[in-house]
Image (cartoon, rainbow, N blue to C red; front, side, top):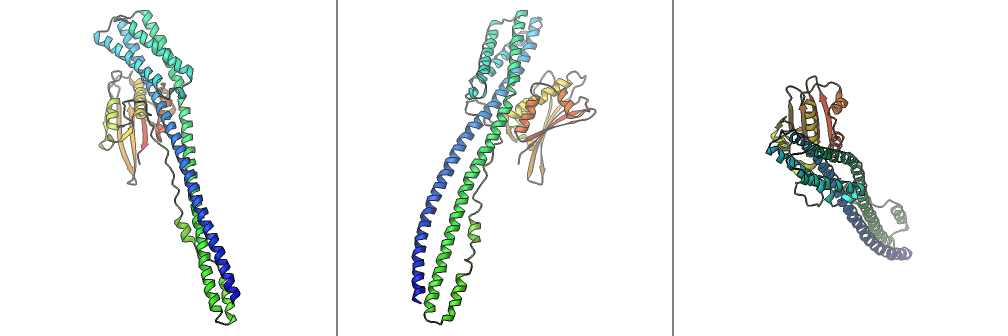
Length: 414
């Protein structure tokens, strides 16, 4: 009987040493895991902030260049009126104001903080050269513009159109950055997942040690009882020692679920370039701005109260709406009775899923599907429009009948 007690004491001393070592290893592993997970999180977050700033300023470049294109078309039309002596003082003032808007937008493109990281050096140099030409043209022209002046501005406009067509390639950079977001999110998830796994292993191992301690205490009790009873009780000890340890599934289950997926950013930051325009804007105000007079055609804006106060990314949604409205106006301006309606509403599915629907509908006749719709709406920003809609996790679809065509933007809110 004494042999059993001595063996139990030796096993108890060995188990205590193993438990102490396990405690130290568990603390060291947990601290190391937390440090590595924290370092990975900080590194990934720093890279994400930089990438989000690049994406925001890519959108800023596309927006500013599109604005400069639009103002150049207006300047061209006003310049022709002034040349033909058909303009008054108000027209001349509008001419100079649009030239100033062109200059401001080009200046914004060249002064963005991350422009050198987005645009090639030769393109930045071309933008600066174009800005100097616009400023010189604005300063040189008087109230009367001769043929040479119109020719000079035509070359400026061609250069601007060439640069803006190159800016469409920025969408590939944005897609690459989105893939980088996904990799960073996966990296952070794996780091926290590794931490959770190590914690689960540590808890499981600690639970096993506690189970072994409980078994040893029972063995000691049996050994003391054995010294006072017959040898027939040996079978009980053998049966006990050959049994399975207590179930630790509940302890393992309680350690699960510590890993949490970090969500990818769906809206674009504008960056820290100091611009005064808001990052988000109420849809009602945005549609009111988009519904202003364009080429003497006034879009009818119908905004449902449920959609008027929805906050949307101002840069992307403004550009999307302006390009869709411009495409419709281009297709219906030759009609005898053009009609253009812009509407917005919020639909609810299953009481929790809300979707914003924005519709731009005109009265052109088209019955050949989406490809023909895009062909009739051909302009520099059509592909950009589709890209921006998809970039916001939305969809752009078209519906055509014998008497109308509609472009429908579906943007999920929840």
